[in-house]
Amino acid sequence: LQVAEFDRWAEPLADALRRVIAETFEAQGARLAFPGDERDADLVLRIELVALDGVLGETLELRARWSARAKGSE
Image 1: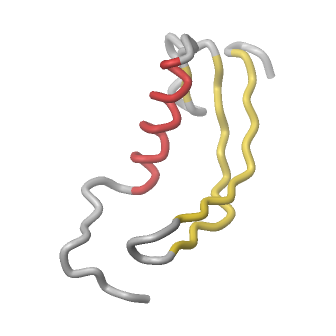
Image 2 (image 1 turned 135 degrees about the vertical axis):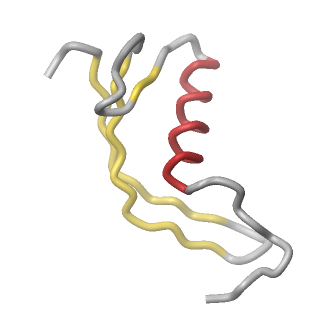
């Protein structure tokens, strides 16, 4: 673990992931929600973060399992 004195994360990782993924889907015209917050959504997305690794100042690798379903379907 390396502390980066001047590189700070401004929001919780879970919130950042939800926000960025939702913005990406919305740019394509789909309203996205996550389980438990399904109002006004077309798709409900479930994500399980498997790994998050990186090299400071270079690359980041995020591995996840995900599933999407239409709102109201089980």
